[in-house]
Length: 122
Image: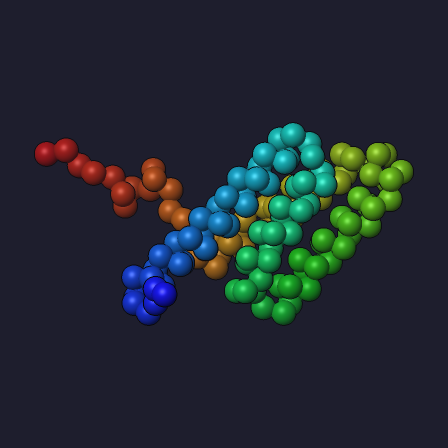
């Protein structure tokens, strides 16, 4: 059985963890662009579970409040139909808040277009 005790394996795990967050954010984007409210809230919840390992109790309470508010609307068929635009707005605001928190906690992978990764031709 392989053992994972090196610094490299910890680094590899961290990279995979960040890739999972990135992939989940991509799914949020796909669900949002498709107008899939149920899929979007599910993927936002997945992203939040990953971020929650780094959040404080007051931050958790704020996110929980937002999720509960949205879930109340989504779980009521009439409100879900009549308040669709408002629900989409709330989901959008929640995703923005999550993305900002992820950035604040240093949990985003750097972009390939980041100047730190530019290669100069000489």
